[in-house]
Image (cartoon, rainbow, N blue to C red; front, side, top):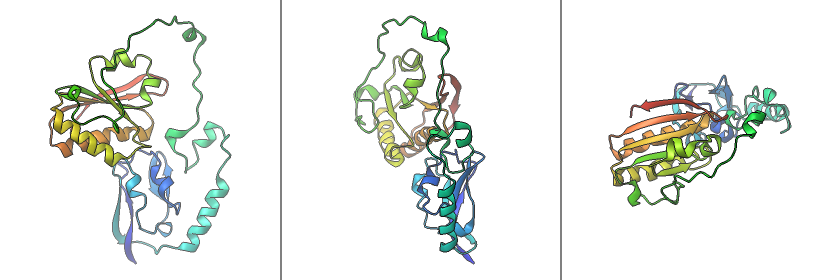
Length: 251
């Protein structure tokens, strides 16, 4: 039969797992780092997962597909629940669970003894503006005018020891979480800032976990919505506190 069903663009998908959480039927799993529809019969085609994708990888299309099977879906959900492991499971085992979010895996970061012996000196803050949360800043704030703006995932300053001296110096900053916060709100708010401020450049700094790259998507969508032509740099930070990639993004 021909009906509406979920379609996932694997090129866009960053494997964040938000759609897995949103799908009440368990029709989507993260397989090899990408969201996949495991069976047509588990997808009701209503699209509850659409609004949860931070990169717009999910759409509803109409195609030939098996009919949604409510009974089979119930059995599928029972099987999924039976496979779930206790929260104390090891990281290695957790990484192979289809329904786990790659960015939320528990891990302990062990530092060498030598790193603990580095003397701590008082370092002045490079923060130029307050507030810093994207939800709270005013789109008309004077410190945005003609600025080189930083858009930063809120985990970054904790992971990157020299964040202030390396990125923050001389730049206003706004922070947010693309996984836990409202992406559409962020896009609209950032677009207002760009429209009102004639930014010189925008640097997006995010963590290496898949869902965090949604911050780059938010920045690109906001620039498109504003109609501005500005330079965008995309920086990826590892969980262990290293700069993995620093590249210019074409918007």
